[in-house]
Length: 237
Image (cartoon, rainbow, N blue to C red; front, side, top):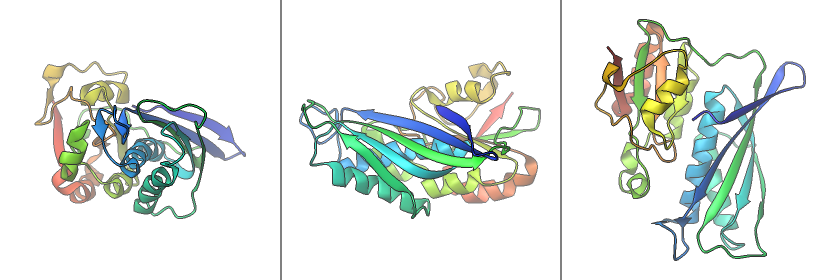
């Protein structure tokens, strides 16, 4: 996933900008997945916030691009606020714009999360023998996200695991776990046959319903305790 833009800013600080978009999900007649706009915005915020946090940043602002019409704005903002509260972020500003000149036949939004982090903060771990890997949560997409909500890893768990020392987190998007694992460690040539897990490696994870964690032995006990029922080991043969 990792659609992250990092910009050096004010000496020892970097700005981190992440994004997500959503289409054909909402309350219009032709939407493919009918859900309230609060849910649409919550899950879109979730994706961009997870990317921001995984990059080592703390969100400081959210920008919403709304193509659903004027009426849904408050509900969309409510969904973003829900995600911010889950992360304990009470001082994050929300701004944005609505397309009000023309009416789209399907719902659509775009969302940016802006964060900041110490410029020297490192969030990556090189792959080596003995590095532990796991998927936290299950890959879900479309109506599965609503019907199997109990399998979606909570934002609070993702944030706490991302804060652990010796842990690298990587949200999984629409291209699936196998693709993200290759992006996570671009210098390693993984084949599907090398990876042993109970989770579908190719299935879309929609709005980042799961993430990959790479962790060292000293962090294993804390990570396993935090992940609880959401943890699915990845073994590399």
